[in-house]
Amino acid sequence: MLANRRTLILGSGLTVLTMALAACSSGAVSTGDGGATAGAGGAVTLNLATVNNGQMKDMEKLKTEYEAANQGVTVNFQVMEEGDLRSAVTADVASGAGQYDIVTIGAYETPQWGANGWLLDLTPELQADSAYDVDDILPPVRDALTHEGKLYAVPFYGESSILMYNKEVLDKAGVSLGNNPTWQEVAAAAKQVNSGDMAGICMRGKPGWGDLFAPLTTVVQTFGGNWYNEQWDATVNTPEWKEAVTFYKTMLDESGEKDPVSYSFNECLTALKEGKAAMWADASVAASMLEADDSPVKGKMGYAHMPVNKTQESGWLWSWNLAVPATTKNKDAAVKFVKWATSKDYHKLVGQKIGWSNVPPGARTSTYEIPEYKEAAKAYAPITLEVMSAVNPKQPGVNPQPWVGIQYVSIPEFQDVGNKCAQYIADFLANRGSVDDALGKCQADAQAAGAKHK
Image 1 (cartoon, rainbow, N blue to C red):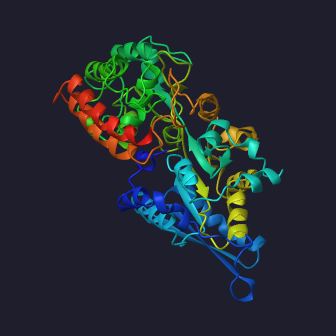
Image 2 (cartoon, helix red, strand yellow):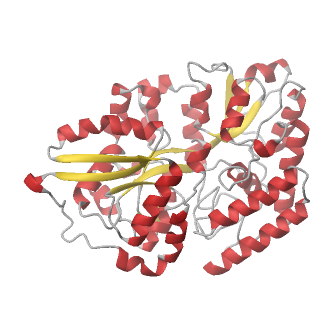
């Protein structure tokens, strides 16, 4: 998933999200008998708010197939840029305005909004439909969307993070990497292939919890650190964090791109395509772009699990999901569409109508068993499924944590805390401050946020 998909900028919606916690029960308007509220002649219009990216545009193209099979139902797509989407949807569901029947939200928001009573519990409808096969949803993704045993959204597509490397460059230097490398092995390989013309590795350094901290949080976790302990005490200013952050900087100083604080997903993707970087650890969806027909490195890339230190896995977990606000007056119709757009049959429809490489990844196990998809995505589909099936969003690091999530903490305050801490550490990466100073300031911010959840 692209960097901007992961940067959860709620804008003014974050204020609404925080202020509306106490009023959530009054905002969740009853749906009465749960049936679809029909207009004149039995017609139903579903308003779907979604993000402006390729996978969602494909769904909008294919909605005519659904409408043809469900006479009287019209699905009205309201497509927005991510920041606008999050502000609009957060404000709507938190206030109980009821503008949308279906919303596209991330794994970060889903359990929080479900706990607040802002979303319908989809569990009964999904479990009652054997054809939908809710157990086919990748377990780590399903876990990330669940609160107290209730599933409040279903994934449209998902991703983890992997290591991507130019096989030709590494082979020429006599460097080999296994399927499950350590960070120390990767740093050594990067140093060996680093040159004046090509960085040994490209990693995110741009400030932002969804930029720098997307990979860096996973590095911290596999080095034994995390944001909080089980009592919601911040654990940032610790030896584990210091070791991980110092390792990250040293690797970039020795073998990374110049000026790393200006690099995020798109910049590293371009560097790898243009032969300006030999390796990159980032979102698994990037593999499909590196293997695109117009990519200069198509067929030259190797893929492995995200590097580790003390843990078995260190990939992150993200998904874009469809949910039904509790305020909808068209419950049955909304749930039915959500089930269609996240079903096995929908994945086959995308392959047949648009192209097998366009099938939404990282959502269903069965997708990776479709022969046509396996052929179209053979370079990266197996490793994506391996990693997404192996990560543990309940405990991604060494120690237990009181939330579900890998590269984020699922509390409303984390967006602000993460952004501030990312700036502190970016200053350290850019030699504008010390690691002790960065972690000390981050610890204070994280502690203030954690204290609200004790």
